[in-house]
Image (tube, rainbow, N blue to C red):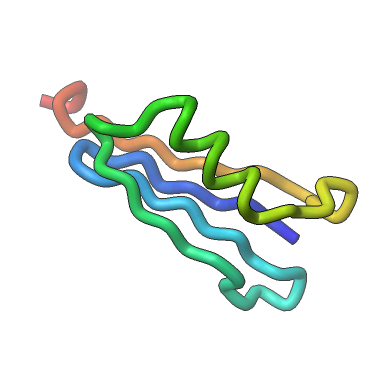
Length: 67
């Protein structure tokens, strides 16, 4: 199982993906409204077996830095 994330300027997406590369759960957050409490609530509801997690992978692209 994998946790994948895409942190964008306007939206943050988090995916829980099985070992067979099937999306189990997907959630979108507005990037300006995301905080630790919302993330904790999301992960607490999942009741994941963290021993089965193989990798965490997050992508961050800040276009403002490229100008």
